[in-house]
Image 1 (cartoon, one colour):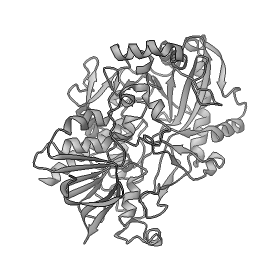
Image 2: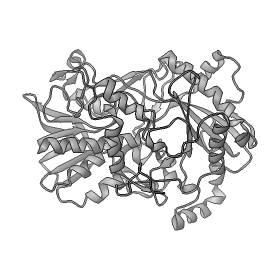
Image 3: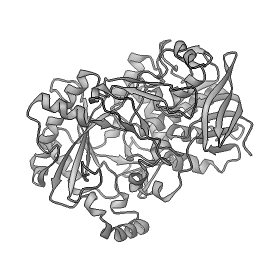
Image 4: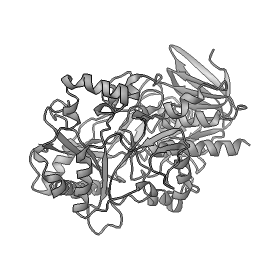
Length: 532
């Protein structure tokens, strides 16, 4: 039987939502309900790291959002994938574990008024969340739920990439979790014993045995119900039925950067004129809900190489042995991740901080078919680490079944384009450095190096895709215009918070899974403190 009321109702079972459900239900006096639109995520494909390739693009496991035509991408529409299951992106992502730089979070606290969100503050929650399977270090804990480890096996070309970066003058970083990412390194992954450690598996599954926690899948949240300025319930749809659960203490919206602002807007929190035009009663005229959308524009450079890479190691005739290796030892290509090494560099030498993020993967895809290439190859994904381009989320209608409008200018700021040009030129130089260049056997993409900045810009605008890291649409801040305050409370409503990547005021120079889990951890503590 579905519960009629709860102390805490969490709308969305993504990375942060799973953490919140687990942490808030630690107190047996608190009745907690988690509502998730997708299904469970305990299947074999989720646990097997390369299973994400088979889940992306499938409506059962991927939201498959479509953007509006983007003038900054020459009018192209883009598919924005997102995990549609418990664990959200953590159940379908590339498993890169990275926190970002000290400067990222200190900027939140010092310049943007996000008190309590400086590096030293959030580092405590990174430590709390993870269980590191490696050499003992002060920057890692071994007691958290989330499995974090070195890749089970590191491809020789990943180490050659780091060596090539060093040859070109970048530092080799021994432990990038100290908040120093200015250099190159082999990255950690969210795996435990060679299997994916999603937020659902790490945090939620152990907690689901608790009698005070109810997890409802297939539950599409419509809105929070507000009376006299206070949240009284959460309305959702399961099957063909509209249901409502009474909230005794707080509702926490944790439905993702794309869906959390949509839930707020359907609840009457947003730009008043836009809400009234859709027939939605206005509760709070909040101009910033849905704005400040940020995403990593990702541009690929790919080369053929002279040694087998993961795309050739998973050929059909090798699959039985690979599967046996994985089932028995949790090793081999089926435990591999798409990114094994990273580097941060400056698009211009005079910059104080690196502004370009590189991700290296020992695999290659055919640009025409988007399937694994028959020849061995490697890829480097280049992003502007902290993009300046912005977009927004709007409602298409008041119907929760209608996916929100994603109106982004992925490369709308000229700085981002110029930075990518500077960064991509260095990618070619790095890959041709002696530790790596000896393995090159021709270009794959682009098939010829652009010869002018105009050609580089066309290459970028015509091929850039997403980095799967949207943030910022319910941004936190110390000013009254911010959607949530530093305790993640929605301004103008009592008993309502947002806790997911949407609250990030500025994207950290990092992949966003570990930061989203950190947000869930910190939010849980804030809620517990205020519930005393």
